[in-house]
Length: 348
Image 1 (cartoon, rainbow, N blue to C red):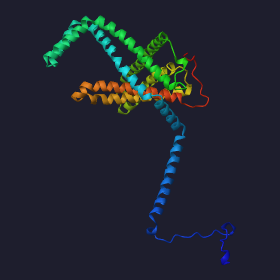
Image 2 (cartoon, rainbow, N blue to C red; image 1 turned 120 degrees about the horizontal axis):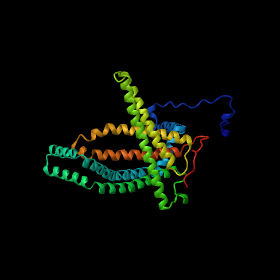
Image 3 (cartoon, helix red, strand yellow; image 1 turned 180 degrees about the vertical axis):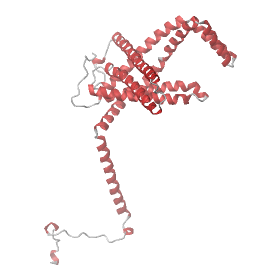
């Protein structure tokens, strides 16, 4: 009835009501409707992108990488890396003093070699003043070799212990469960220096062992290749390069295994330590390869000849520090079921 003009509820129908079609041409749609449609489409794409990103982040490998990066940044990994770089470069000064002292002892035993060096300086240095300064410096190093050696040894020992202490604190900051230092982390100064001295000796021993393995394996490989006359076979050269690369990675693995096993206060998880050390070994080998190919190009220009080696050395120390701390964070944030801790007592 007209006076009772109520629409019938659509849910009582036995069929779907036909929706009213928009017969207007596209140009007849208002700007507002077009913007709403575009926003809806854009929002849908953004939602799909967000879902895809969340799906990727839920992958165990990616999630672990993100946890390690978050811990590395939250616990001042970049700042610690810069500090380790500074102390590493500072430790080179006493090492150079020891080198000069060792050279002085060698030259004083071989006067003809010393005279040959002086002759080379006069031939290759065109500036007479600079040549005289170099000769005076070498003569002073030879005459004061004992003093320079003792001072260099003491300074190297002090700077090396401090370098080891800073590396230990940086790794412990990434490894412990909480960021703040606890009362357990407080040590007496003599205990700290003694522990750092022992760790420094252990690191030097590990470094000597790794270098010896690399050198001995490389020499043995070259001897075997030459003895079997395999050096003339072209297609075997990539194989020998791969073997040498594997030996170098193994040596890196032993070095980083000692660092990640010895320096943290608590024993790391076994599976996390093995995998994290393997990542560090490969990363360190990549750094060495990159530096090997980039350093010669740095010294081609006059400015590069003056500062290229210094910048290259700083870059090497910085990348080494960042790699070490990031892998320490990676080991600390690993979540593997039934992953037992390494045997041995925790450092108290």
